[in-house]
Image (cartoon, rainbow, N blue to C red):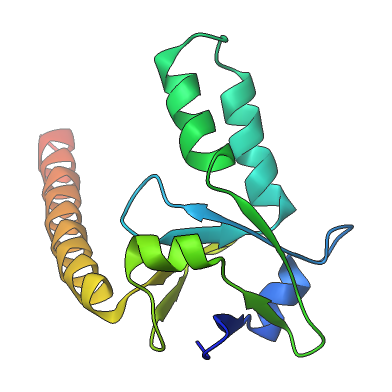
Length: 146
């Protein structure tokens, strides 16, 4: 990220989110301490999720407050960059170096230190989950063949 809080969005992601709005939506992630971003399809998924909940539902309010309340629409400049809002950068301690993690149709922007901690934690979750899944599959094969 440069001194003006600009970040280059990879051309592949820009192509994937191309549409009527030439840019991305960014907001504080509801899963982790980072910025989450994506195209109109991601925004629409969250809007549909919120719309399924009744007005007055605490979960609806939490999602509205977290997503809509912190969202910024960021347009691409001619170099394919977006300028991150200062308030989001301050919220997550983002400065000149950031870690960007692609997650399919969305991405996350982390401070390097927070990313390293999250990476280690998620690697352990993945390892434990995969081991449990394999154990269940083995048990199903053993139990199913008897």
